[in-house]
Image (cartoon, rainbow, N blue to C red; front, side, top):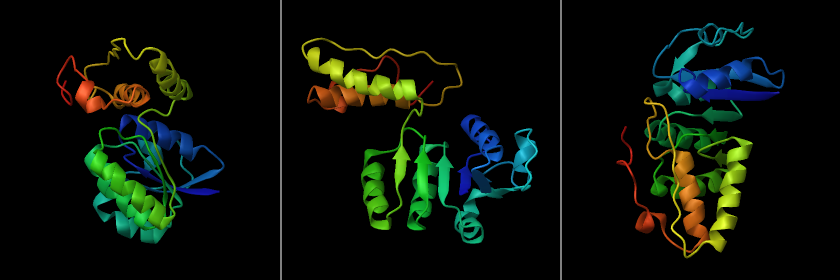
Length: 198
């Protein structure tokens, strides 16, 4: 059984992850941490009967929570600043990470890769975990090789609550394409609306 720590269980993805993890017989949710809903029972928050009655803990006490619960894996779909801080703590404790947070800095990602190797704590980082979207990433790179002289556009639309623009998925597609045509996305990209705003 996998001992799981969920970071950000009160967000949209966090709720979905929590409800799936609680009902999975191969997973034991040992802790959930957030900045809100502290002390509330995780299962009642996601409308599922949690036999372990896990209470949401304050993420500011993450090291203490790790020491008490000994998670093996952490899932984090929060925000860049929180992920950069909290997943660093997790990796330093040898905890494997699954990260769906977007907009993390290249500097952090480079340092995090070194930290993961040093602590032998594997990590999966993707702006989109959907199988189909990951196929789009792969196919975009292949197609870009045949379209080097063409202008390539990534167009997306989202609900008004979308926090990051362009999305992590759109940026990843852009990165894959620019890598395939031996270019730097930061040098060739033009954005239709201000990056990081709604």
